[in-house]
Amino acid sequence: MYYTVSKGPQGAPVLVLVHGAGGSRLLWPPQLRRLPGATVYTLDLPGHGRSGGPACDTVTGYAGAIVAFLDELGITRAVIAGHSMGGAIALTLALDFAERVAGLVLVATGARLRVAPAVLDGLHADFAGAVEFLNRLTWSEISPVLLERGRQALLEAGTAVLMNDLTACDRFDVMERLGEIAAPTLVVAGSADLLTPLKYTRFLAERIPGARCEILEGAGHMVMLERPVEVARAVREFLNAKNP
Ligand code: COA
Image 1: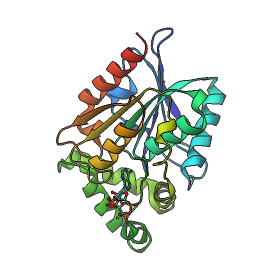
Image 2: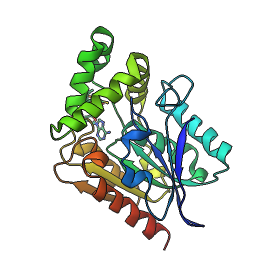
Image 3: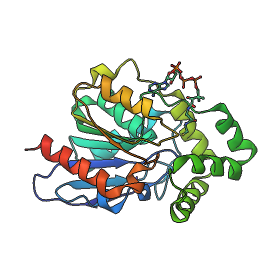
């Protein structure tokens, strides 16, 4: 797996950033990839960005790939931050590999991520059209720069990878298991998120024991790119509170 690392001071918390469906490490803003006071690993999931290997079609498959990544780098425990499908992967790690998870940052995600059948069907019938539709739902504001960035990311991912990822999302469901999570958790989302609505965020915040929740008014599904400074501040405060 391809990754970049931004080293923090000795003893700094280790943060691993996990992107969402059809994404890559570049969908995390620099403010998080180079978060001061932390050692941050930002990775491309298998089959994405510069990473080799096929994409998985289950969230547990991706969670296994991250455990292998942590093993390879000799990282025993890390705070796992995941966006959307990456959040599903982070939740799975916290449930099934709890000893490896020092904390959870769940960004614009949910405990269940059903995908509208029209989106899955559309990927095969008209890939460019499905990408356009998904991309429009992804952003709260129609910023031409961000829209183009999102469109390019999805087009580069391609039909097979996006299909695998959305299938993985569609199969994911840990709604009944959130009470088992022991890791300190921060939940972050935009109030105008159309892909993982606020209801999903509230569910996470209410069911994960002791979870903190930060809602950014007006932000959409790509809350970390729409509001990088505020999201980075929330993560930094969370890490500081965890490691006084
Ligand atoms: N957290 C809290 N509640 C959730 C949830 C979550 N993660 N996921 C689903 N639910 C709730 C729903 O709100 C619904 O509640 P209701 O019965 O009170 O209305 C119930 O659980 C069942 O929902 P769901 O399993 O999603 O089935 P559905 O038949 O209601 O809807 C979809 C299916 C696909 C239309 C719907 O999930 C959807 O619109 N998803 C978002 C759009 C999308 O495709 N996003 C993914 C793109 S990457």
